[in-house]
Length: 276
Image (cartoon, rainbow, N blue to C red; front, top):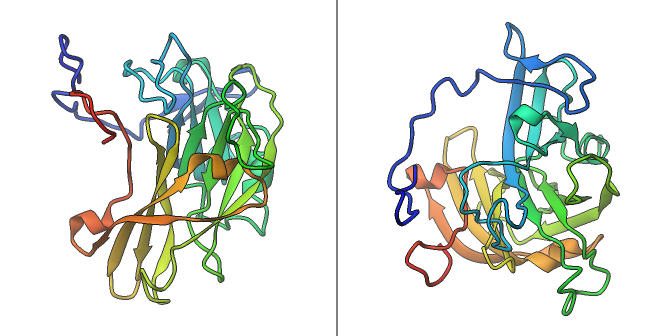
């Protein structure tokens, strides 16, 4: 909840019955998806697609409005009619407007060599178009607006795969689908020994649009030990298909409640200054 005069957050409303869902396909074909006995949708990630004049004008989408008018949800697991696991759903006109499958997402994320069952997409971030300000882009970078979906788990070589998907501003479907893959390195045994299962748990773009902060979480299922780490990467480097990107350490938590966190968000403090 925001204080009316300053716009600053002054309270958090309680979320009640968050699993009582009901939504429909945007094109009107197919039955509504709703909670009934036996249905299950495991949504692990969400990212807003801001629109100038509607959701604020911050490059990173730190909108002044609290309403999500256009957003993408990452579905990790699903047992519901019309919804497939390891997929991305785009709600281009709020939940009431229905959803469309992000082109190329289910094919890329559902491939047997991709994220695997119950292992993605848990980290999701939107990068706005760079066509207007394309100067300084790395060679081979795709300048259009994209959504980057990251697998939850790293592979045997310690790499976490990110899937770069076209995210056009139009909400009427379409798009180029999968632009390519990127490979994130830098979360290895130095952070957590081999007995830990590590993966990307969440991601956020700084309000100036330049840096992606990725939350990595490592867990030992045998002992319950856990480690959380924030790592940073240049946003433009995630636009280059086939690139191997080394993440930079920002902050680590070993154990304790905060070491088990699974969400991160970058924002501009109400008093001005740097990013929060």
